Length: 639
Image (cartoon, rainbow, N blue to C red; front, side):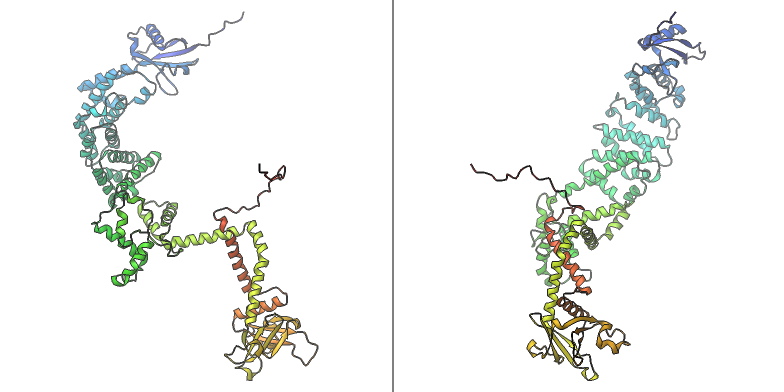
């Protein structure tokens, strides 16, 4: 025979009674998942002959001891072991009764006064009256304890968690209670960290959630005392609770009190406490610090939107100081006002002031925060530009300082002070050069350089030939008697002859006054340095041939001179003549000056051609040519 089909909604389990000292035999049986839990508890109480089933509830044994509720009953499987324990309501009643008995007050230390997590998470119903009475009793118990009582931390924690149920409004708390909690924060000497942390959290909740209790808290707590707890305690929980209370106080305070808080927090003493005692900044601590920074920075909004008082001498002096910093060097004496007065109007204009006679008038517009023309003339712009984009300089200073992640405000100030306006300008200049160098390596730019190079070389060649046409005076190089004699040489305007002759030290003879000439077609080559004929006898003299060059002539007559020799007065003349002669001979211009000029002119020409493409990223590869259109009927016929 086949075994009967088992109902999938019925599981086999075990239940153990945990409320009595004489534990009865555990229940081994079945439980229908469709059966109400209350009915099953009644069934168990009947089985064990226990009265008042409403006092009991079921609890899981693993993995965590949570109450069994209608929502989590799906965790019951075959073989599950449950405990039957007192219900949450019965437990709350027991605690309440024991609290009422003064002689059993010490049992508070052993009672589960802060079991909110295990109860609330699973929505176990607790009578509101019990919670309200429990809060009242906890307040009474707290007032009876000394600061060093071992019961005090548990009382405060239990109070805070019961208040989270929302049964009693925070506004209902009495001033005496608030003063008592504040006394734990103001106490001199050591205090249990749990007491301090919970007291801070209670006051923060009062300030945040009550409408009329802020003044009571504010009278009892001082900012220096709160910041002292950050300095004296390294526990992140306490530091975080202090910041949360400070943020709540600032948010609820009026404008005058906020200015007081800001002044206190911005003072060097307390600012150092905040920056040097940050501890391990987790997500919650980082949030509190962010809120504090936001609240403090918001204090400047009112000043930013307030127009300047014409009688405020301090503000007037600051405008004068701004002009002095921008335009007077440290060594310049500014006492002679008469000599500087005509320049003041121009300088204030450069700083961006509309009223250059009375600059303070610009700050009387409301709101002055819209005044965007700020400080310092841009050193790369002409005087016609009234004001640079100094905002970009300030932004770059802050950004470059924050990159190194300064740990304290002093480190931030030290780093940003090194990034002066001149330093930022130099950094930008170097970055611009680096970007240009990188841009010049792009394939399209290289191709453009290749196309432009013949044109630029032609331009350099024309310059060299014009230089030769103008002519140069050279020292004579042969014989002891020619020591003080000179030779002048010019290229004819038609570029067909070199005209040369002897001259004195100061003369610049015209081409008609030069009696000797060489036809360009007769020049075989040009040689330099040691290869020059007139340098043969000067081989032992160091560097005597550096500026020497010779024109080697085609000649079949042994009696004729086969070279014309020169020694240039300097490197520039030497390079230009060697380049010019090579250009006439249709040879490459070999000098380093030609390479420098070519690079400079190519870069200038490319930059000019790329002006319209400023801000456009040059691609490393040329874009793909689109496919041809389906037809070429582009003509539009007018109707």
